Structure formats: structure tokens, C-alpha cells
Image 1 (cartoon, one colour):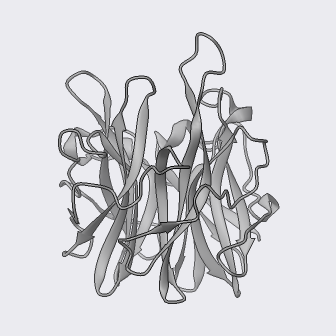
Image 2 (cartoon, rainbow, N blue to C red):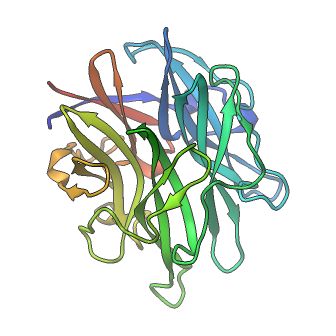
Length: 318
């Protein structure tokens, strides 16, 4: 695969965002509409204590992906209620059309005490073409279980072969890598199926993408697309510690392929995005989302600082 980078296309600092949010446009994911492409992302505000909250927003772009038409000025999906799994944020949100509805699979997160956060996957539905969403219920549709004890999230859902498939991440645990460091987490990509998109059966604790960096590799945000009769998965990966400010240990985009949506072969050489020092994505490339539009295959992704300054675009050459 040959990808041509088209540069950064959205900078949140240049726009007024809803819910008092500033900076960050993380995990861009698309809903293709007749006259525009709606790109959802997670952005951040601070609560009364100065801690971050993650909110959902979106930007509508023309179908050439070169002009911004509007940025959401309203609450797309409110945060969860007191004590809920998504009380403190929603990051990311994956949307898809099915049965005349727009479904949103959310990763809700809430703060913890001994570790920083835990996550689970929720489901919401839109009745206004993705402008706003309403939860099906206060709880998650996919969460911790016997052999996946923490950090279930990053769900990407596809309907194929008469059933729903979800690729998601599950935490394998938390670890202190030095005596004075806060605990860091490790997570891998898993797979679940469902007849209705609500009730899911996991392949419990089966890591479907092989590690490249060893057992302390963290894998995040899978996205799956069919190209020329083969399924391709894109995701991001990093070391589990010393990754926030060390470019050599930060996120890069990985790739795997499959012919049956079950067994995957890793081949990162299929996604050779150039890393250019000093560029907006020269230190980090993360949170990919691949989609089709007007006969082309595009890749949205975040750059340095986990998407603090926005997201960019690449296109797959024929």
C-alpha cells in the first residue's frame, strides 16, 4: 500500500468547541452523508477541580475533505450520570449506519483511585442523522469480564456476513515500571460478535494481533476496511511506559490483514507513513480511522501530543 499524506486538516484551536472545550481533537471517525462528511472527535474541558473531561464534538467537511462547513456548537452526547462508567468522559466514539439508524459505540471512562482510569463500551442511537445521540441505557454493552479485568474500550463495529463484529481493546493489567512512577497500563486488541449489535460474545482474552515490541506493547483503536477482496486492520501501538514525551517509544500506526475477519497477520510495512522531525506528526502518529469515500480509501489520524493540535489525512494510492 502506498499512502500519500495530505497534511493536517483540522486544528481545534481555530474553532469554538461546545461544552467549554479547548484543544484536542482525538480519534477522528466518520459518518459519510449525502452532501458532507461528518467527522466526530473527542475534545477536552476542565471540571471545577481542574481535571479533564472528554466530550464528543464533530466537524462537517465537504466531500473533497478540503473545506470545513461547520463545527458542532451543541452537546452531541452528554456525559454519563454520577457513578456511571462514562461519568468523566467519552473517548473515542465509533459511528455506523445500520437499519436506517445511526449507531454510536462509545468508550466511556471514569476516574479511579489506585490507578488513573477504567473504561467500558456503551451504545447510543441518533434520530437526527448524527447531530445528537441518546443512550440505550446507563450501562455498557461490553465491559470487564473474568479474563479481561480492565480497560475494555476503543470498539470499532462492522456488520458483515449477517452479524456484527467488534474489534476492541482489553487491558492485561497495570504495572509500576519504577518505584516513583504512576502505574501504566497495557492493552491488546480483541474481537467479539453479536447478532443484534447489543448482546456481544467475546473471544475472551484472545489477542488477535501479534506484538511487535514484546509483551509490554500496547495496541489501541483498531479500524477495519475491505480493499480489493481482503480485510485490512489499522491500529496504533506503543511501549507501555515512557511514551508520553519520548518519541522513540510513542505511538505509531500498525497494520494487519485477514481473509476471514478472524485470523490476522501483522504487516506494518503496509502502512509506511513518513515520520518527519519537526512536523505536526513527527513525534507521534496515533488513533487511525480508515474509510471509503467516492471510490477512494482515506486515513484520518492524530499526530503529536495525542491529538492536542488536531488531526490529518492520508489517501491510499490506486
